[in-house]
Length: 320
Image (cartoon, rainbow, N blue to C red; front, top):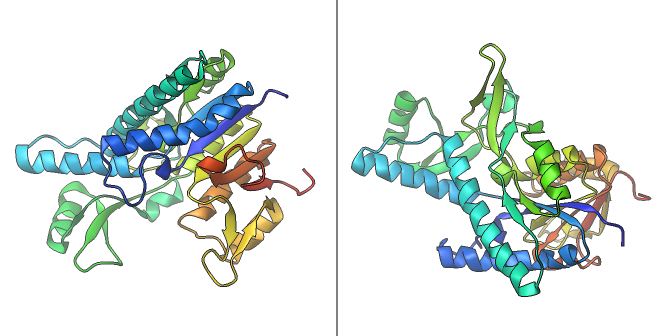
């Protein structure tokens, strides 16, 4: 079997299921259950690079920030530091769990976690219309106060009365720091965990010749697609909570897609047949990967990862 460089983006349910409260015991069990599914790829000798989501974890960090500031006057940390905190914590959990699984399988292999910075543009249009909700819920009076004191943007929840949350931008990623190092570690035979949560959003301040952070969050699947392209990966997998991509999902005319090419994907997105808040960004990330030289991208559920009869395979053309 030909050796491949495979990038796998672990979805949010890899760490925390929708019906769980997020205890460390729950997250560790979920992590182990998910990572066992990549062992066949490792046994086949492929190079593996992992990324992961961090939405619930960053939310918890922000709420701890709020509680510390309210109760003990502890200074709040900015969003970029919270993302970095989540990368370190989740990366450690993934690394330790994977090392234990490798020991059980008798596989000797290093696992390396990198806290990753992702480059975005300061003038990205996303900053004009922030949409990603982060942190705790506030009543209107407190929301107004926070907008004045901190310069935050808060929006009302469509599902509750007098419930306001902070919203931040989700700019487009265009590069990842330490690409050569990631490639070098991968070539050494180690499994690399990088670009967690989309990475820490930073931009290059040309005027001051410095790297500066931004109060934003980056789509994990898009950032991982950039990473996969930059390291010339062969295949890119996005693990989510469904085994296939569907059009008209959960409607009477729902249709499973075993294969998807660029033309059909763009047609279905234009027609609004994918969920814009969930599946559409994943498909866009997969298209970005194959448009930049990737051979194949697959969207599927973790337990179906190595079963080639499952998963939606995304290529430029069907004959690929």
